[in-house]
Image 1 (tube, rainbow, N blue to C red):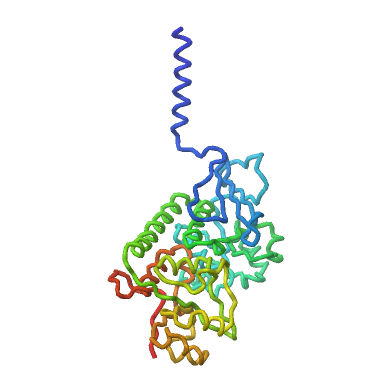
Image 2 (cartoon, rainbow, N blue to C red):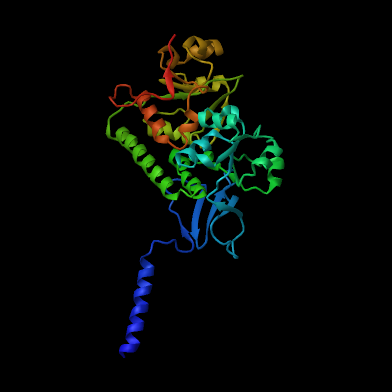
Length: 370
C-alpha cells in the first residue's frame, strides 16, 4: 500500500503546486472597470482583444490575436488579426498615442509618424531630423513608399465611421484601431492603456499607471461630494463659422464637468458625441453660464473673443471676465488628458471652485483679461 500511496501523494502535490502558480487560465477575462468598448481575454499561447464598434455596438469593429513573438505560433487560433507582441516597430498617427507609448516605457518602438506637424514632442522632432523616425506624410493618405521602407509591425490610428484606410490596408500590416476616444467616461478612455500595455509587453506597467489614475481621479470626486460647494453653470467652446459644437450630455467631457462639481446646460441630452448648434441655440441655453471654457490658438483676451464674434459679449461669463482659454498651439492638452483625466479633473475643480485652497497650478487653461 505504501508503494501505491507515495506516487499518488506526489501526484497530488504536483497538482497543488501547479494550481498555486500565477498563470492565466484559458479564457481568463481581464477585469475592466470603466472601458465599455474593449474586452481582453488571456488564453494559452495568445491574448484575444475585441473592440466593439462604437457606431453600432451590436457588432465588433476588430478582433486582435496577440501572440508573443518569442513563442511558436499556435495552430488553433480564433479568427482575428494576428499581432506579434511586444510590437517593436510602430507607425503612430496621433501624438496622443505616442505619449502613451512613451509613458509605458516603449518610446523606442516609435519608428514612424503621420501628421508630424501635430506632434509637439521634441523626441519625435529629433527622431525625424536624424532619420530614426520616418515621417510618413498625411494620415489620410500616407506615403506608401515610406511605410514600406519602415516596415512597421503595427499601425496605431484612430478609427472613424466606415473607415476604409485606402492603400495602407493592402500592405497586410496590422492596423490597431484605437477607438479609445469613443469611450463614454474619462476613466473608460484612460483604461485603454491596458490594451496598449498588452501590445507593448508592458502589462504590469499599464495596470499600475491606470490604478494610480483612478485613485487620484476619485480623490477629486470625493472632494466635490464631501464639501458643500456651489455648482457653477459651465459653457464650453465657441462659435466658429456659424457653428457651435458642444459636448453631448452623455459624453465624457460632460462627465468631467459633472465630476468636478459643475452644472452643464446640456446635461439632460442623451448624445455621447458632440451637438452641432448655432449661436442663438447656445445663447438661449447658456447665456447665464458662470464659467466659459474654450480651446483656441487665436483667442488671448476678451477683446479677441469679442472680435471673433461680437455677440459673445452677451454671455454672463464674458461680462464677469470668467473666461478660460486653452491655447492648443502651445498646450499639451490633447496629448495629456485622454490618459490622465485626473489632471484635467483637478484643473476643472480649481477653475470651478477658486475659493477652495488646493495645491494645484493650472496647466492647460488660462483666465483671459481685457
